[in-house]
Image (cartoon, rainbow, N blue to C red; front, side, top):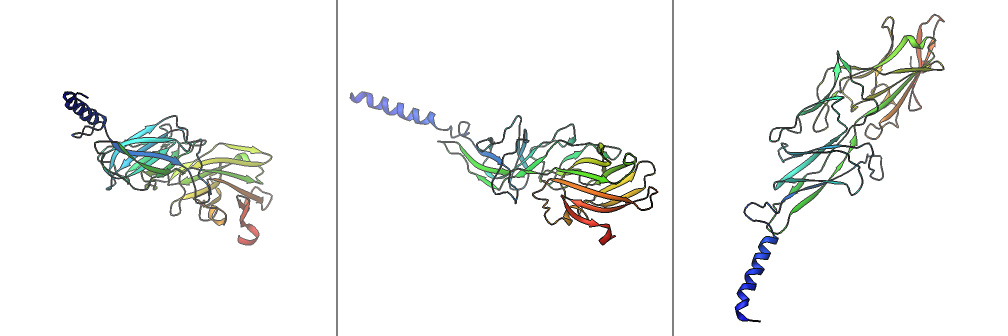
Length: 310
């Protein structure tokens, strides 16, 4: 090799190495961030699953102080093992919170503000009119938060993306209530009162007023049935079932959905179960239209009996 060509070759190698890495001054070529994956697994599940009902995901990245630093929304999602979302961040310690199923048709959703929104802030409020809740029948809402993940600063040679997995847990609950034995079932209605219609970004229930949930009723072979979908169920909040006369408003039954019904079934686990059937049987005590609740069944488990408890 000609000696005069060696300096030119050396300069070429240096230039090549320089442009193949990051521009060190601002790291605009090499960045850092988080690769987020999603799955769903309750404490009762053996394996993770990927619900097909998760069709959109809203993500928020929060720093070590719980302040929102970045957000992202993904539509037309199809959860599977290799599905991921990439979010660029500065170097630091972060958690990622994700929600799915929040539609503006049903919820008043708070705007996320970078630099000021915190995990404890209100995220949404179920729409209502005159304290009557918007029906969310047929919809599902999921929430999850990743473990904390540290993202190091990218150097001048490669981008760095740390992995974070989010367990998307369903917070909606489907409740089918039936009442047997009413001669004129069309003169009665079933309602649920609850104060769990608002939630914070971190998945906790936010303070709210008591609102009424109504549903379309069907009557077949003398059995009245109504289907409800409620948000997160948790002890310490008002969740009451009411069976009453449409004509007089007189209540045939009022009881706590959790304390006296669902949680009386030892097989019910609110962290795992989201589909419930509650069946009431009634009896006309005097053949005069005065009814008494005789039995209450929760998921085919007898939780209340007239003969033994009333």
